[in-house]
Every structure is written in structure tokens, then in C-alpha cells.
Length: 132
Image (cartoon, rainbow, N blue to C red; front, top):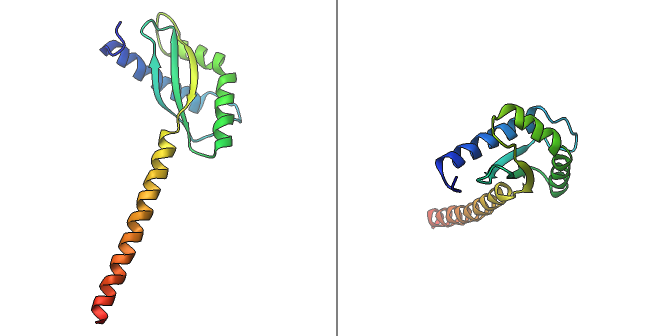
């Protein structure tokens, strides 16, 4: 199976959906932040290994604790994944912290700040023109 084949894309999306469901509903570790999402999943073409990119909406400490909690629960998560997804091999899961959503929120805030500053200066210049 090639890396970008239709079968691999389907396996990736199915594993991503099931991983997010397992993390949200079944894992009861208090270290795992409630606003944890599975951003992407890359399953190797031989179905032996899986990289799961995890995003945590919170501070840096919450993200580190969440990744540590997921690494400790990887056996349970893999067993639950094997029950829910019928694959020949259940992949070994590696959790990787992904900060792209947090980065996007930060950039959006910066853009809003810049745009908000320019609209305020435009309104002030319009008010000055009206007064003249």
C-alpha cells in the first residue's frame, strides 16, 4: 500500500475518528485536558506504526500533562482501538503535540489587533474631517 493511496487515507481518517472518540469518552486519566483534540493521524503503510498529532487548548503545562497521560494510557488506547477498528495489525501509537491550532488562534488575535488599531485611526480621522 502506497503512502497516499485511497486505502491509506481511509485508514488514517478512521483511526483519527476512533482515537478522538476513545480519548474523549473512555480514558479517565485526570491529567488529560478536556479540550484535547486529535488533529491528524498518519498510519504507516504496513499498519505497524501510527503518529497521532494531539492539540490541547490550554497552557503549556496542561499540554505536557496531557501528552504524558496519553503516553501512560497508550496500552489501553491501543486495545480499545483494536476492538473498534478491524485491522490486520493494530498500530503502535506515538503521540505528538501539535500546536498549529494554538498558533492559528494567536495569529488571528494579532491580525484582529492590527485591524482594530487601523479602524480606530480611520474613525478618528473621519471625526476630525467632520469637525473641520
